[in-house]
Length: 294
Image 1 (cartoon, one colour):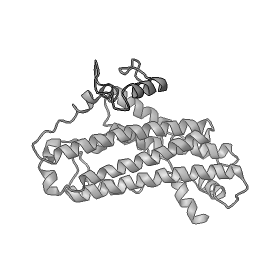
Image 2 (image 1 turned 120 degrees about the horizontal axis):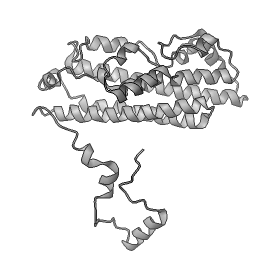
Image 3 (image 1 turned 30 degrees about the vertical axis):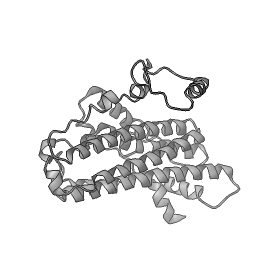
Image 4 (image 1 turned 180 degrees about the vertical axis):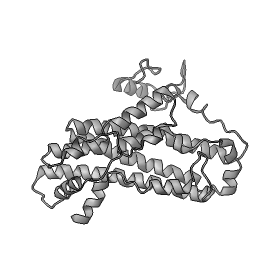
């Protein structure tokens, strides 16, 4: 959090007085830096786009990639709020943060539309200049995956920056949102084995039949049980996040197919094949498998 404000705060009363004094017209004269620029830090934001070529599509590629990075940061922030609220048995704020997360994912997914025009010929005009740069190396995206519960220790290896690596290591070793939701089910009367509740959170998650059956019980029709209703709302909100994340993965695969086909990826992977395999790992898996038994 910023410790020194670059924008002078204004109260509701001050805003009303300013509007009245100006006859409802916007303020157009400022003695110092524009307050909008000061708050948004546009001086920094708009200095970040530095294409390496004259290819007309590179600016689109770069800006949209940076927009996605900002959404990764926002989603990672929200997921941490979700986890902490669940661990404290505070369902209302957890639900609020989950619903925001789903909407942020929806907006993130819409970002792909800005690259739908890109053919292999368009991408080839600047692709070589990316060198080995690859989305696989996004620390913020990896943080999102870890907080969702998708953990693979090998994917920590590229990150040598101490601050980034420490953040990722912490998220890898700590309970994920799904771990927190599962622990909450146990605290609310669902019998879950210690192998689930006391597992090593820094290991890849293995779906549990006991967790699956807990969600089956949550979704049984019992409108008169407020406890089950609240847990069902949690399940619905988690499902929405999982579905929006699956849409992100599919949109990524579609964008790669459209712009480069099955060529090798920039970061050493086989590109399309790597992305398609990653889609097989479901987020919050028992919420989906439980539907077979409802």
